[in-house]
Image (cartoon, rainbow, N blue to C red; front, side, top):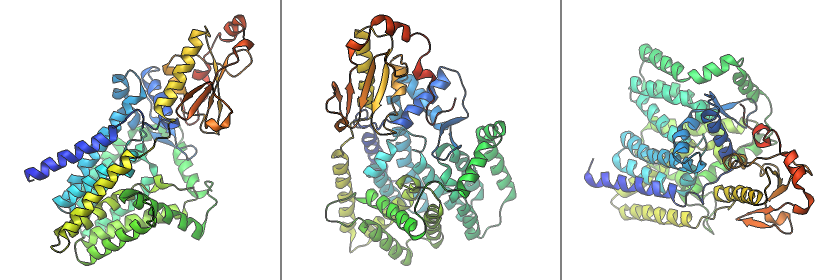
Length: 489
């Protein structure tokens, strides 16, 4: 590798890390998923419960694996159990994904494609903000990069590396997103396209590795009567709540794909049709393929990847958002990098290619630094609970009750901070002071204290007497005993 390319990659990774950590606390989108993560980690460290599962997914009866939560533990310990440590974990994973783009696509195509893909991955605000999500599904794009590489290895006949890598990736599907299972048939197609016979020794070794790495899932299923397996089967045979069917659902999925590509490339500048980015990238990729700049086998694999993903979620009876099609983002990153590399390599349009890269970089920085946070995340929620704790202490309240004046779902995401601040709570009653958290602020005429988009209404202090409060605060802590949506002990 040339020294200038090496340092260019170092700069790209450094910028990628910066964008994933800049205003870390202020842009930390803390809500119920992050609250659950803290609860799981507390269960492991405080209750000494070595968990096999994480939180309940949106599919009833199906849990996500616990690997991401164990990765978070060292960062929680360094930051004294504060969830802010999670942003450093995902920043490191994001940095590794940037390097992975370079490594994988340099091997699959060439070094310039590798550098351009790394640049796109590092700078695109769509990917940056995805990488800043401290959730178990965050490594999905990283998984997709190496999935692409494992297919490449099998295509070129290197079954040993290809299937061993595939075994590792398949084992991690449960810990990231079970929806990735739909991509596994592509391995069969890659083997067929390679025109090589299956190496049974390698296949058996890979299967053994897969079984060993899948031990947490296997143990959990064996102990619980294969409850998740049954739930997954039911989810594919019963309705999942989506009212869209047929062409209406297909149109919805296509709209999601269009949004993904548009957000990846340039967002939503005024006056530009939302679907333009999708059609430009699609048309350009076809031209590049017809010119022989993309190998047929790779093009077929990318097309199949797209077809399986879109086809499955069109037929799947569940409401679909951009999140479900995130694995395709890596395909669009690769295709965009190949297109730009070919423009740069052409004598006639060389400077157009460089101009497009510069334009993408400038626009990405602009989109990132003009992004407006919702101001109801980590900073604001932590301040809300800290305020309630301080006010309760100043007035000698041994416990409080907390109500939420908001829509269902927005009342979640506070309980870990309540525990972290050692704030004892009780059920809402007339005997314990009740603090009300408000969102949005338009829901009430006035709040007593404001924290970004959140408000707090203090109790009517005159309604309570010390004796009644002290008696009512005896016994259990409601925050520790009340059930939590998505959390299983």
